[in-house]
Length: 231
Image (cartoon, rainbow, N blue to C red):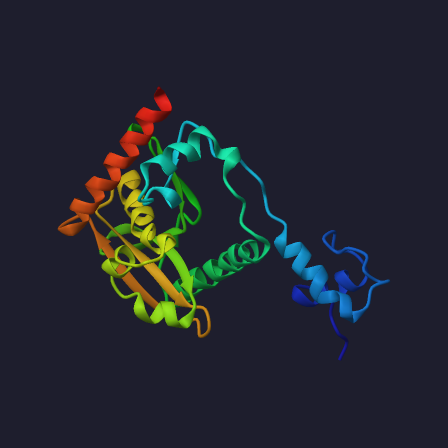
């Protein structure tokens, strides 16, 4: 039999070997011992940006300190950048996010508006959702979080986040609530994956009950930050 033209992934591999991939850099003079350090150096590179003074951002909206919310906007240049290891963790989280969305799609769910921007202008609140899943005729925003096995095992409710002794975990419900409010929804969910096994679990958040109490406290801190910035 006569083989037909090569296409698809195999063609991509051939193109890379021929130098056709524009992302390929010249490492021919390097050795195998250099590979890990070269990859790590690439992973540590990160975009530098300053948070716009006009906006609160969803990822920090759940902060327990009003002063921090104000300083993030008044003096964003003073914020300490993540160290190299944390920068790599953030990059890895992006890969885990793509894998999680792939899990949902493979399971037959309709996933839309991935990485879509949301704004609540009255509260000057802005963020980007990981996506929406259609459930019971409504599109529900969701946020993907990936955690080490021991953290994943003990995070089973919104209160587990709110009562954590880790500030970065206590902020997560506020991030999700920000998406609910900016989207005009009444419900959203966290999609948590185990970093070791990939196993998922879902934690819903509804705009009712205790959420109204701690959510009101969060909004008061955001309003106070807005006033501080306006002075």
